[in-house]
Image (cartoon, rainbow, N blue to C red; front, side):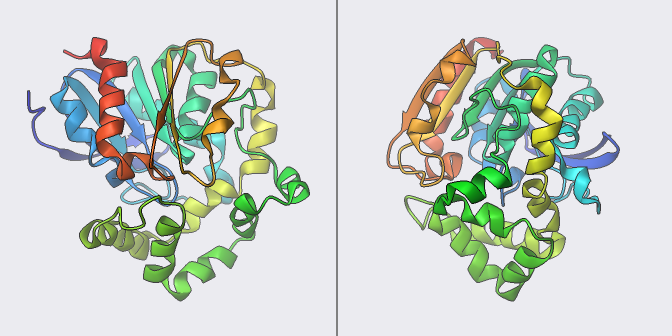
Length: 294
């Protein structure tokens, strides 16, 4: 099974236009990217899932790529991000889907599983665990108090305009540095692949993506009623041996909050898991979802 051709589509959902790419037939698998990425981050997984008898759907999250980029900072909070995902399912007439996330995409899919469990068949998270804190991100107050250098970038991102100025000063160099700094192999992106990301952010800017981070305190308040709630769906947690931000041990004790959990470690891998180790990620996805395939 080849899964057919990869198709670019646009749909209206949750008050915005969402651009997504899809390939294949069968049970839908929605792939949510992180920062600063695009649907293109899943370029290795989309054809593999399609060939495996599944329907791969990879949107650009709001603020990214071909999807709309609302101006208001508050339009990037957890309710909007989860609402986009559920709205995409509605627009495509999908009752349920498997949700797969990486980095900020993982925060979206865990949030969807908590807020709309009836729409989520299974959950896959690359690198980001769910440990009972529904917002998933510590507050800026906690990050300040911790003094943890791993998360200084989050604090740097908080002031509107500051990080934009940093990136705009040398977008090619600083975007490349962002990717390379947390990769196990800094050459995981070819020149042509890097150019896809670079052109998207040259065109669309980084304010929308950075606004995800500027809502972490707001998300803490919005999601507080869900704190401690279990994710009951079957879940696959994929950790990366050399992710300097989200180390494998952060997934310890997840079973308390995700009782139907499988944990897998990918070795010799940094933060950009599905791009650094695509074959390993594809194998895990197809094994975890194989019974859903046509």
